Length: 119
Image 1 (cartoon, rainbow, N blue to C red):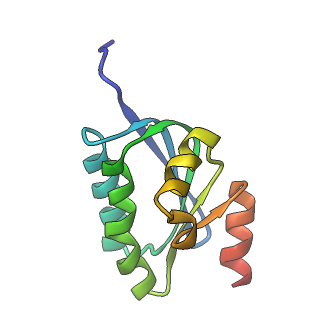
Image 2 (cartoon, rainbow, N blue to C red):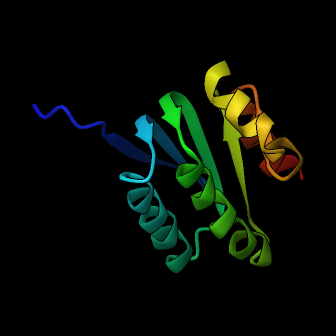
């Protein structure tokens, strides 16, 4: 096992919503993995995305940049990117940069699903 900080991304689909669960570290080294995953979804016409942060231990500005670069494309296609289950240390990074005004951040995944389904 290597010492490098890694990011695991698992995908689950519930109706027309794709849930991406992040585990580990989202930084300059791992951000391209997430970016290509979201681009893959967009290329497959999957525009409703929930990112579950329950097992994400760390996020850097490079990680935050992935979401900024993809949100417009998703919203232009009547989709969105919602976020759930953030640990407080991860949420504080989002809050510091004003992200809660840009992204919908839910306490839990089900709340995000409900918001997609109920408009």
